[in-house]
Amino acid sequence: MFLPQRSLQTVTLLAILLFVCSAMCQDTENRRAVTEQQLLHDKGRALRGLERLLWLQHALAAVHTA
Image (cartoon, rainbow, N blue to C red; front, side, top):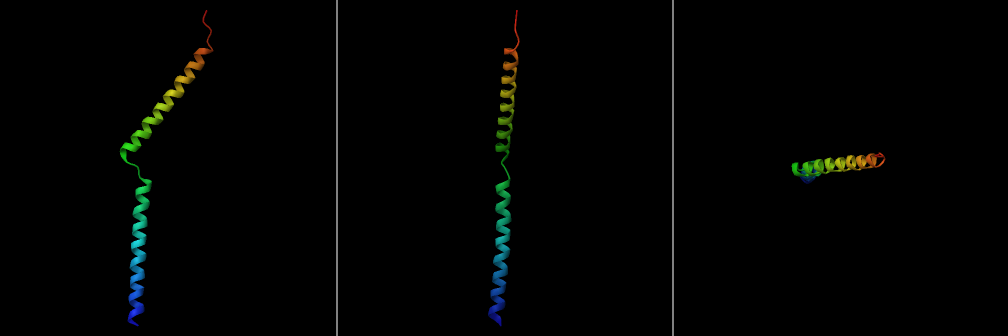
C-alpha cells in the first residue's frame, strides 16, 4: 500500500514540475527584448518612409513642367 501512494506522489510532483516549466518556457518565447522591439519599430518606420519617398517620386514623375 505504501509503494503505490509514494509513486502517485512522485507522478504528481513530476506533473506539477512539467506544468511549471512549460509555462515558464512559453512565456520567454512570446516576449521580446526592449531592443528587439525598438529595432522592429525603427525598421517599420524606415519602410514606411521609403514607401512615401517612392510614392512621391512616382507622383512627381507624372507632373509635367513647362
